[in-house]
Length: 193
Image (tube, rainbow, N blue to C red; front, side, top):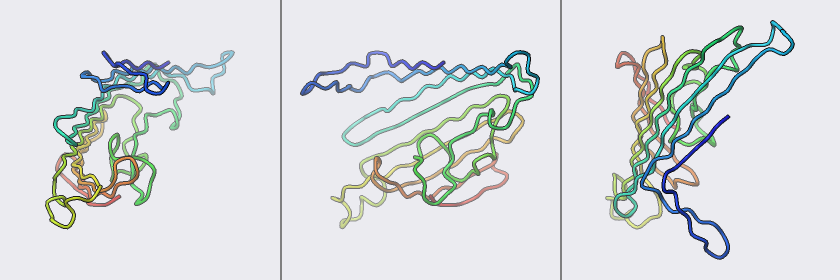
């Protein structure tokens, strides 16, 4: 079961099509999953999973956007839970991928922080009209976007993980990014995606 709600998310009819306007409020989402054995089968895993998330795109000024996302979840009443039932987080460890930089980490392996207890990922992405490359005179009028990224991930019984990154590209088509990842500032990795 999942439900998403955005307060005051109005729309207009343009040429017979519904076009949503931006809301001043974030989108709230709730997810609940439950697995149970059939006919008393002891091999089938049993668990309950719940997640709550909030996300928003805030526009302040022309082409100046701040995206933020936070999620929290937990697994409980677990019995013979299998690895595919864990919470797996979006990662983009591969140099070329169809995943975006907004709701995931770029330097983690796919299953490195998978959780079977409690978790809280949070991401912030700021995309201003002029960040670094747009200040160069020969790139000033080119149609591309730049953004700064700050994803973090906290999983119970694991070290907190944070990345800091910068990306260049066209937001809805493709991005190239450089990221630095930290495990509670004890170790770090550098990479690109």
